[in-house]
Amino acid sequence: MIDREKEFRNAFYFLKRWAKSPLTPSYTRGYSAGLGHREPAQKTYDYILFLGKDTSSSFEEKVNLLFTFLEKEKAEQGKGVMGSPFYNNLMTYIRISTKNIEKGESVQTRRR
Image (cartoon, rainbow, N blue to C red; front, top):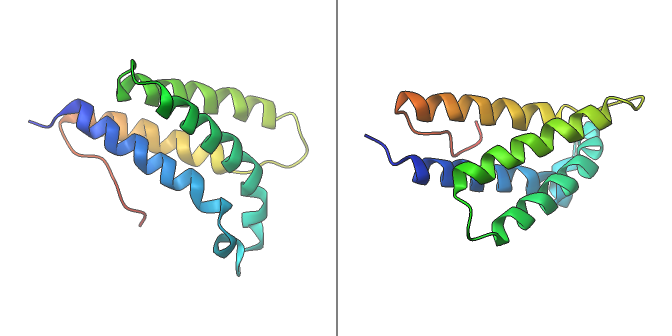
């Protein structure tokens, strides 16, 4: 049996690394579409840092709050002309990770 809190912690920190990645200079080298990920990544990373400071919530609650934030940001982004798949990708990861934890499997912690 897996430890749910540990797996949600792993998912939370994987999302933190994923959100920080587009903010590095090497991310856009040879990948011009990466420039469109910068703004969504910055908003997401700042929110993850905000959630990280809250020691009273469990990691499961933090992941759920992050999912709600991503849904809201995706809806606001949809009003513009062009959008980035950044929010969708993170939301898909959260859904898959939650299903894996419910099944008793561990979450993905490395980029493929």
